[in-house]
Image (cartoon, rainbow, N blue to C red; front, side, top):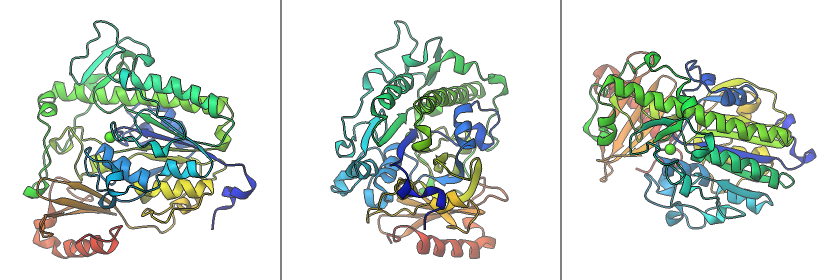
Length: 444
Ligand SMILES: [Ca+2]
């Protein structure tokens, strides 16, 4: 039963603006991180609903995006890294944008929505607007200091950088398609590395005030199977406190730069009077370790990479500015957006619409969220519950090769409690819960 404010029958077709931000942590002002300058995303949160406990299914670009855009978990897409196309395993799957296209919408995307090199022409009504030539290279002025360092700045206009051009072109797109129902997916590539953005965003932060993680070490008792892949080059770039501070400075500057570009697109939506008829979803595809666990990377099952920002704004919604603390999986976005737009849900979907949470953010909801990562010695299936995270590593012979349990009321991710006899019953309870609740069916 749909909420009254969502009565689709009496209203014209609602547009969808789906903004995907690359590697964006929920380290934003509206998420309580007051040191971050993110006024535009904050404003979206103030006029929509912010999800405090949204998790991605795999903390890797292509794997996470493939899951969200097909509406199924990674064990169905078989995309665990940036190395495969979901159509290899699911040749005929109807993607989220494709479903809108099939329902008479103009479906269009700009920049990185699917991962580079894994485009999906079936999803769109017109060819993808490629920005490759201006992504990190090609359009910088002579002498621009881009030579592989993670963090550089220059006093240049926003649209020297890819996301600035994305905002320019998104504004043009909105003007062009404003009279037809649309599904418009916008990819923003910062704060993904490299941390290149105009100087004015760097100047928003004082490096002396940037705090380093208080947990810069791997959990005590981490099983071998859970050992993360190390990125040697990033390790080198973060080998001193000054370098670590500069790295975070770059990430924060790029977060504010991304926020500014998102603001320009949202402003145009207002200018064109489309805001009252457009569903907006802002989502980060994965987080990023900025020193937590001593890591400067993604591709783990820890909170730093699995927890993502998610904000949804729906025309006419009552609960503006409400923060929802219920668990939501990123794969739930597909059915939610369809329901909000009044579209039938394709049968293959494995996510669950969270429209009921938009109506009442406090209702009883699922008790956990699921993420996974394909590690060196097996698949790490991870479940976040109210107080714990439980991860089980399953080897190729389907045997458990390691387990992790973290209690966020105590030592958090500093100590793996799965090996502590005192937590035996909690581990057993969570192992059962993992199998009983894993969506889709537990594979082993
Ligand atoms: Ca990403």
